[in-house]
Picture 1 (tube, rainbow, N blue to C red):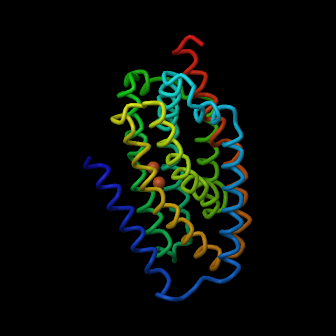
Picture 2: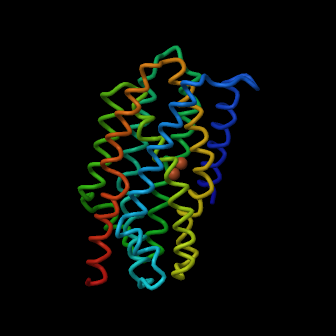
Picture 3: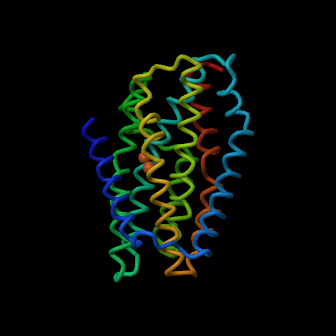
Length: 261
Ligand SMILES: [Fe+2]
Ligand SMILES: [Fe+2]
């Protein structure tokens, strides 16, 4: 798919640029490395709460009705279509507010965000393959959970420190490859249609590079702006209250309604 190829090329370019930020062989400071380790511990905690959720355990259970699993994925994809454009716009806003003597920090992050702009549309395509209505998707009122997610990212991007957005983007990009890799195994088990797995399969692969890029950029930012650590942690605190379980809860309401449960 050309849009995917375009996205992957941008992501590769962003990765290449970010690698050139530090001269080869030069390490980041211990403080910067420790900060990313703190974020990684927080992401691991988020992953544990996902694994302990009733919904995750239902999807992981081989005896769960495959129709229910397919409906859940269908409506999670619809949520992605709803909040996705807001997250990318909020992110462009945040990066646009970076210190104007730092195009070196802005460019890889802008390229990364650019590689994400059509991912809502990518999710919509799989939603349609699962029987969803494009007209309904494009005209419906978004769910409260997607609204909360969108509002959180927009407020962070517009009003907090410009670096605070890394507090939502880092866990977003670090959790996605973990969740989509698990989803691939569960969907295989439930006989989920391969043709509707483009969004999931793309993210299981592509977001590993995005997570690495974000780790590098967080280190670079906190090394040059140590005060950004508190801003990034605040962004993280806000984000983990709106993602991912609340989003899945709204998807569950739609899945149940469709199946008459
Ligand atoms: Fe994406
Ligand atoms: Fe990504």
